[in-house]
Image (cartoon, rainbow, N blue to C red; front, side):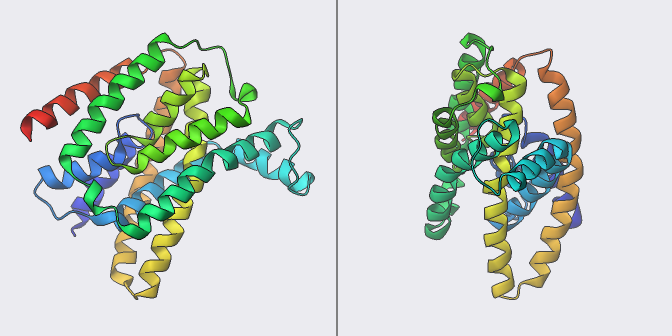
Length: 265
């Protein structure tokens, strides 16, 4: 795999991971439409790890506050503390996708990397995003999220394991259906990406180390660095956008792209 292909994939990842348009679907389509070798799940995970580091860097103050309050309470749940509460909500929301993702990873995901599946998911979940964003109220914040809300968002995240769904898109959609405002929905969604991506990354690194695939590890490291840079820029711009505008452009993009893919196929 060439450096140019990795750079192209990293740019696609950065542009699409935190925009609700499906990064995994775009990564697969990029290679297919450019007539390049499919990069495989290993490179996909490395690109997502770069996005994870970008989230950690952008929200470093929130993450440090969560860690500080967890240590202050000896990791005991204390929902009177804002960041301790947020940390346990993220844990609760992560559990469904961790369980489902581990199961799917063991039985194989290649069958789901089909352009027809991607096209259908990009289209249908784009419509759902628009409806949730357009007709839901926007009065709730992360301070109002309950355990029930967190689990519902976590269950929605499971669908993102199918390419074309969009992890950020489906979790934001559920958060908007629960009447959480756009900025806080995006923030919770981005923080929620960290546990699942970290778990998938650890499994993939272990797999590559166990078979001694050091060449692949170096390719993955390059992909991670490029993805980190692109993802951070997009997170910064996305959070600025949501303070003033809606998800409408992204929903329209998904509908148009989904229709084009299905017609093309």
